[in-house]
Picture 1 (spheres, rainbow, N blue to C red):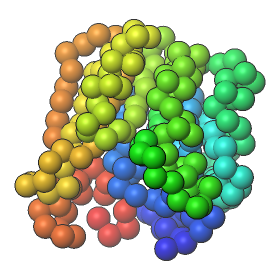
Picture 2 (cartoon, rainbow, N blue to C red; picture 1 turned 90 degrees about the vertical axis):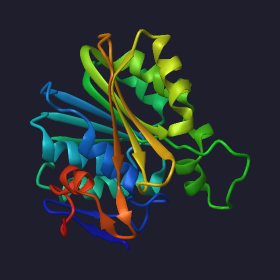
Picture 3 (cartoon, rainbow, N blue to C red; picture 1 turned 90 degrees about the horizontal axis):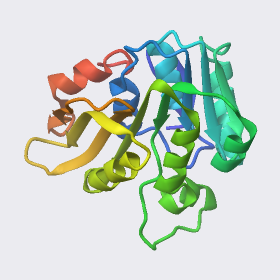
Picture 4 (cartoon, helix red, strand yellow; picture 1 turned 45 degrees about the vertical axis):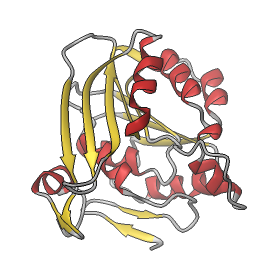
Length: 236
């Protein structure tokens, strides 16, 4: 599907290697905006979906997205421009390090749906490799960006495979970032935990951990998943 219509915006994704998936929907809907972020940074934005979801959910005046892939960058700009919040959304065509060198600013919210796949296998599609494989954006680089950009009272929100949760928490602890909220995601009641959504801040609080089951059976969504995503999906 090259065009994906949501309740308040539309995303074109025919030129993006990684299409809109459940991971982005979960992260964009779950990430807290209760601290009223003034500005937001979306690392490795792809279609721009996370930035658009945060724009819909918050009053953030400045939402900046970084995208290194040429086609994805152009498509993201197009998606931003045709959205109701085009005056608040900005996409930068840069690598993470180029952006770090160029920008001297602190953000109240940093959000990232990073590449997961660290296996040796690669496809012939360079853009898809870039979007899917973690050597294009290692966790250490993301953490380095957070050191540079997260404001004192800011939040950093990320989604990772469940099996990598402890590694991510350990890496973040090196820069005195602590998990405050964690959401474990299961595809159905009988499946294993598949994803971890983790929200970090510089404040060490008791961690609020919850479990979300997406479906009771194929295409039968749980009420929890519907409640989380209903502001976005047309048919929820």
